[in-house]
Image (cartoon, rainbow, N blue to C red; front, side, top):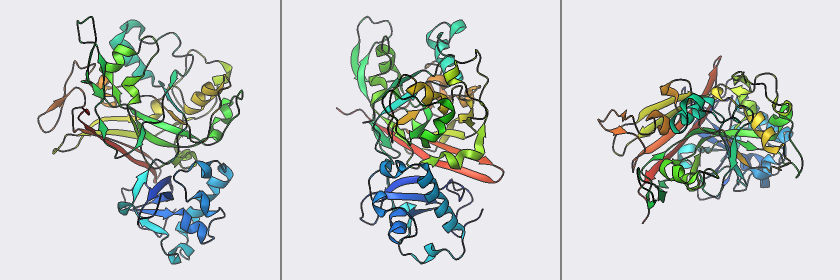
Length: 409
């Protein structure tokens, strides 16, 4: 497919992609758009011009929730209609003023109002690495790990859009060899390379989503950085799990890439052994081949890639995560967000956290400016990117980036 809109060769936002987001520009309030090349298609303008068969009010909101709630038959139709208009040489879009807004002139916002957030722990390699570090290396995985997608219900209030600065968190930390904790800023601040999916269809309390129907309830995906304070987390997580070591912030990319755009990149996941229970059993390809990259940029210094991984490594796929999440009758709502957990590969270059890259702080990571890192220092910027590419089809996620500022006093 080709488009008459200029799309740079290295662009994530090709005619095959067309992700949805919320932006503001030109002194106007937040509204819905779709990314193509270096431009944003203003969906509210198209609706007012009667080019789209959806009322403009759905696009003149500060979130995509109401639009997504219209259902995939409508949201998919909008995406395909815009795709057609961007391909036709005689497209009416060429004659609609303000149909396009340059991305460089726009401010991006959270694309959805997130009601609830769940974080999973679905990478076999990551879970094994953490188990080796903190438990018995010969029995790194807990007995339940290969029987269910482990997860926990988190908070949505501190999920922020890419470009938001994050202050170093403070909390209780138990110094090595000490018997009592101290209160101080985290000295072991980390990133977690994750992806997240956004629920696109509601269920009722008591209803469960069958694993083979789960994709009907997933609107699309974003990149997700689950910032983690490892020293705070280590002291608090027994017996009830993550709390202040995680809840201070998570960052997401602003553009939601639809499952339909990712369809060409579906692949089979790792073999699951032992055999899973029937409600988690699913046939066919349900993982996605998405190349992921993490870079670290110290202040006033050059950017350096510190991790390359891939979403296809996930042991538990999104359909299984959603089926497990709702098997007890837990209802979900449009805009709910569910993150994958850290995405690590089989070798050190694919470890999706500094906890693994530095092996708990025992190894140093050399930087090109002569510095080293074990964990994130103040004024470091962490950026994550994701690209799926196959047979000349390219679909990218843009980036999620955040700078760590000193702790507030």
